[in-house]
Amino acid sequence: MDRTFLLVGALAGFIGVAFGAFGAHALRGRLSPDMLAVFETGVRYQMYHAFAVLIVALAAGRFDGWIIRAAGWSFTIGIVLFSGSLYALALTGVTRLGAITPLGGLAFLAGWALLLVLALA
Image (cartoon, rainbow, N blue to C red; front, side, top):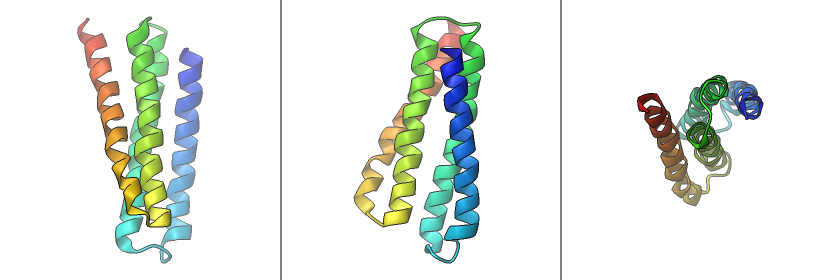
């Protein structure tokens, strides 16, 4: 499982850097400043949580069980829902996509809470 999260974290980091460059170079001037800020928020949270998934990959070698795996999948789901919905919102302007974003935020919170539980166990 630690290799799975190493792969997910590395892929999320790679995509985050690529999307950050895309936003800074290709989208500046094409999106309103507000929508560019939305896109950049997606990139920022994706990068934070790419590192969180990498932490899970490292911790999975030391801690075994469902809690560490659930934390990793929570962060992964959070990246897809939170950052993905912000990217889609910024690029399409469909505001209803913003309703998905809090679900991703809840997944991020669940991942951090699970790591907290693991640390206190």
